[in-house]
Length: 240
Ligand SMILES: [Zn+2]
Image 1 (cartoon, helix red, strand yellow):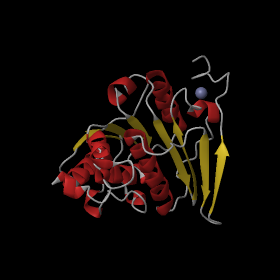
Image 2: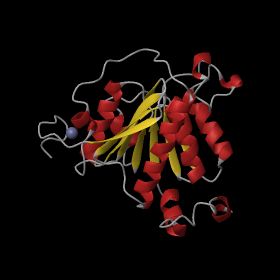
Image 3: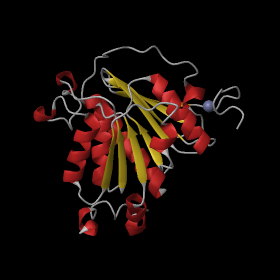
């Protein structure tokens, strides 16, 4: 049954049954079940990632619904992580999904992320991103960052030591803006790219977006591909 479910992706060059087995044996943590996390977790489930951990402390609100598509109208007011777990399990009963109704802090990051194969960024704040970045660098866990606002966004993949970490790229947290305007399709697009990166990291196919950051600008529909380097005085990875 599983071979049939994944029969349109297994023939992708370099994938095969072995690649599918690796996905089944993988654990991916999606932190933040918003516009990015709803889409990335759904496509991770579709691809057959064996264990997905969904982390979010909030409940769905009406103003989330232009982009957080795992929330159907009757789910308003419920915890995002719990709703998403139900939807993903109904979508693909062959995978395991865990809901963590909490925010990630320095105190619990080890417990939540543990020895995951990849962490996928679905966050809307830099404080938490930096906590995860630091943990991922320390424990050598790849971290697929993306951010979206309006019709723009950016994505990069952090593989500690191999390339720059989030702090090499953003030494200071960019200003936090509450309720940034955003079109649902923007995080959906970036989340799809995050899933491609995650699948590549797990199966070993292709070249991950390490040492590069893509800036996507939807109004003029341009993509800028910028090379980025580790910085020697990075407070997180500088002395590694
Ligand atoms: Zn760094």
